[in-house]
Image 1: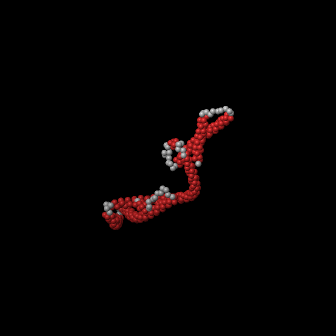
Image 2: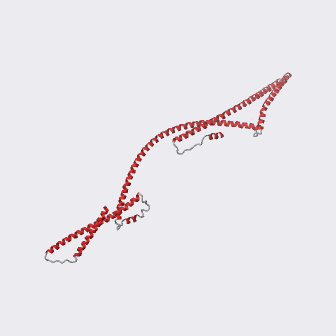
Image 3: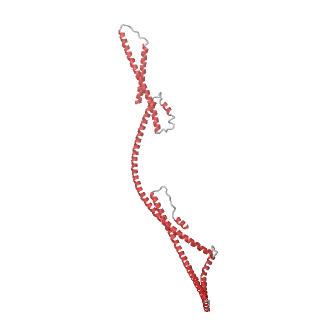
Length: 377
């Protein structure tokens, strides 16, 4: 675990990108791939080192095992020899029971066996003496290390280490299998990344073509926007000219004719509607122009009514003049006769009234003509 932590500490912390280019993601994936490969190499080196240590320990244990087997073989041989000797002694004792000679020989054989046994005993004593150094070594280990109070604890520790060795061997086998699986996954991942890289390359080419098309469309739209801006400027110019013309006509109608105030009626109707409208906005100018046009229309209707009234007055005046001329002709005919006519007072006021009416009509027509002349001027 400490080795894994040290290996992980050597590598930089992984970075996560939400919105990056495909090339950056590809480089990041390659970096991760190299980091995983380095980690595998480090783990392989560590496993190789552990494997060498395990092999050395295994060789030591194998040597000890061979020594123990050799001792066991010698002891087994000793037992077999003793068993054979015992059987031969029994056979000889049974055969030499009747014969003293055979017993003497048996005594000799027993003495020989005793000598051999003494020799074997001395050999065993020597072997015990040789093995005492191991016991002394275990004693020194027990005395030098506080973790072990008895020699049996060392033996138990040895058994534990053997069990741990077996576990480590199993772990090494599982790790090798895992390494092979990771290698297979790495190869398939690398193949997948190559396929994705090819797909990204095709996608980049397609997007480059789309970008060129978008740039061409943008240039066309910019040209259309310039044309629309020019048209909008022309329309704004025409609208401004129309508004100025309407305002000029409105001022001519209202400034020179203070006795007629049609603009007050329309301004009162528009007071509630124009509160939330900006004075410089297009809508405000449009509504103002419409109101002024309505005022101009009202003035034009008044002028039309006045014109119709003047025409009727002129027509009546012409009829009155015709009647007056006919009466003058009759009077001239009567004057030619010898009869004497008396002019009454009723005719004079009529003449004066008609003359006054004529003068009033002429004054009114003159005023109207001056008004129309002022408007047209």
